[in-house]
Image 1 (tube, protein in one colour):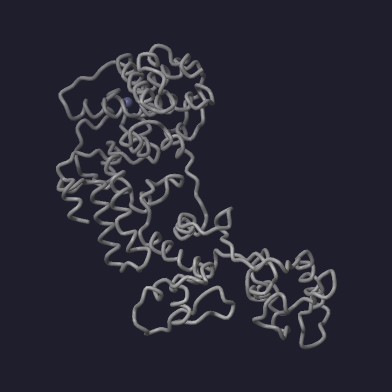
Image 2 (tube, protein in one colour):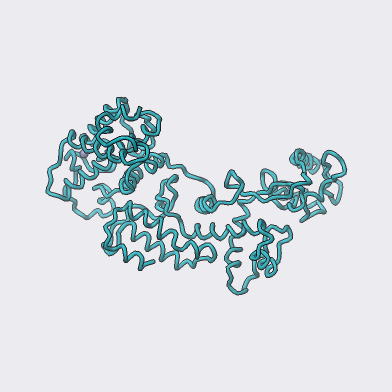
Length: 446
Ligand SMILES: [Zn+2]
């Protein structure tokens, strides 16, 4: 992998390009390996170091600040990351695919090999995990994840012959033995399937839990709750019991859903600006910039000063208004220079607005400024991104080059131009020319 990266060293890649490369090449290189073997921690560490370095520093460009913590970068885009993915979780999700497929493919050769070598667990869904101390084998790696995999499975009861009544989680609220521990201890039928608890000779189901003694008052109440819980259960002779996947509406296993479960225990934190940023029709490097703005991680003066308090930055004020201290929310929103640009934008689309608290809030708001059609959304996304992009270019040129800067009117012209240009190459505007869009933005989105 290092060698592959070396080949890219001469290519000048923006951060957006590097991100694409990481996702398409680096992230998927080890997939074949990862779907069969557990990657040793050391290797994961090295791979991640390569990816980190490549994203923030390029190759042989020397050490640079890593603007965003790796834990955030690996999150999915919906959750506020760059969607690079955590290799350890990806590895585990890919291995879990075999656990899912095992009971579904009883006639395949691999199933037979595993079944002969390790034997089946008594419910027949899973193979036994290899005993400790046995030699290293792919199945051993795969079985390691069995417990957490089972947490995400549920059962769909058919004829009740393969699901264990007390022990398997086939009703809401988890396994019955956990919901009714006292009754479970009193029952003589442990490790038995559902069908053996019911009398099928009569029309409605009659349940027999086979308690070892008469129940006392408290236990009778509990038993009543238990019966209430199972009263609507119907067994179907024609359909076998099935194992379903909890994390996906289809009930089928997906690596993606399991990966997300492994990285945050199934709780998805929603990052409101994500669709505004990643669905826009602008180049990847612009998206990455807007993402950095949304999470407030750019090398503005205040951030540099916080990280290295002893560095003397010159100029230490905002290069756009030369009056206030520079921060992300200042240069991209509240600066007296930038705010005029936003006013021009909202004037152009004839929408009134209230200046938001920060860029995060601005990007989280769905202004529907141009309307709700596909073209309207696309052009609006390009316009907002173009403001951020041009402000950043202007600011950098003023700081790093011998350049005094342009006025707001000129910069607004550039914003319009770039927004129209990005829109004109998108699918939404394939029948429109650049000049057409520039001529009247309100008309083309109608
Ligand atoms: Zn300013």
